[in-house]
Amino acid sequence: MKYLLMHKNIEVADIDIDDVLGGITSVNEVMRREHFPVGIVHPLHHNEVIDRGALNKWWCSRSIPASRMGIADAFDTLGISDPSELLTKCFGLSLSDHYWIKPNGSSMKWEDVNFFDNNFSDDIGDVLFGTNTKSSGFDFNSPDNTSDGNLKKRWKIIDGKRCLLKAGSMPYRQQPYNEVIASIIMDRLGISHVPYSIIHLGNEPFSLCEDFITKDTELVSAYRILQIRGKENHENDYLHYINTCKELGVDISAAIDEMIVVDYIIANEDRHFNNFGLIRNAETLEWIGAAPIFDSGTSLWFNRSEDQIKNTEIKCKPFKKHHSEQIKLVSDISRFDFSKLNGVEDDIRKVLEGQKPERIELISESVRNRIETLQKLTIGQNVYAENGFTDEYSEEVTAEDYNISMN
Image (cartoon, rainbow, N blue to C red; front, side, top):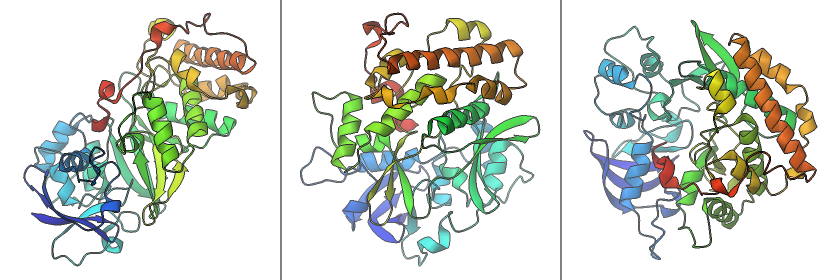
């Protein structure tokens, strides 16, 4: 079927989409090349050829991943076989950016369909959460069709605000609580972040946060930024990202320092290239700056037993494979006042109340140890050797290591 790829009310390209398989089969006419999703214009061609494969990959990446918790049952209920089928049913609309598809000949406008201004159905979210009461007649007009990630999640309109609810995973369902702890730590350090709280549905905890994207701004992931140009021979992924942002007019170094420091403190294991990035104005394409830190739940030994908390080396992303090496990338650690985290262990204990006491103490003690390591670094004390910071872990992380394009 023929569609117009739209960026708000701007016609970007005339495209064909296979409504059965869900992919973009052709790009027929380009109207506004500069409004294509970031990284779609092929970087190897001086004449700016549109990379249809990259465009199709971008389009399919908007769909719910097949690895999402409980997705097979949800698809059975909805009567679909592939998540990409959901995309055309909601015109590809999202609460992270302003791209959508308009059927050729339609008079629809952005103002008529976007989820920032217009209500949306709870049907898909209910099915994803297993709380649906319908067996047919579903309203597919929902941003849940374009939500990424493997954990159970959904969008809800609460007091007029677009809010994301996100579950944890067994055995501890700890990720929602970790989001709150990370928020507390960043509040104390004065680091820009998305605030999180906890909500319980039945006996299950969910993190709750308000959408930090508006009807005028959009999130462009670090992965998409890295597609703007190829990596130079002298660049690792860290320099590739830093330098590409500079070329866009954004000095991202301080924000990356903050992200690396926070991830070290909370032992974050999954800061992949799709859960940080830049914010830009959707109409003017002006780059505004770094996105606030979000999605920090896969941390604090979330799936580790008590013995593993004591003895397991935590790996990390996105620039190095171990925190003990990644923290070395911070350009000026002395600017952080870690005394602001004095007593944060009490906050951690309060948030994790309900977990086993031994587990709570191990987590809070481990966080305190990591903070003390950073405090020593701020006064120039060499703590690398005594904390296992060796060249053994100096291997770079690459995009391919984590299949980042698939979230």
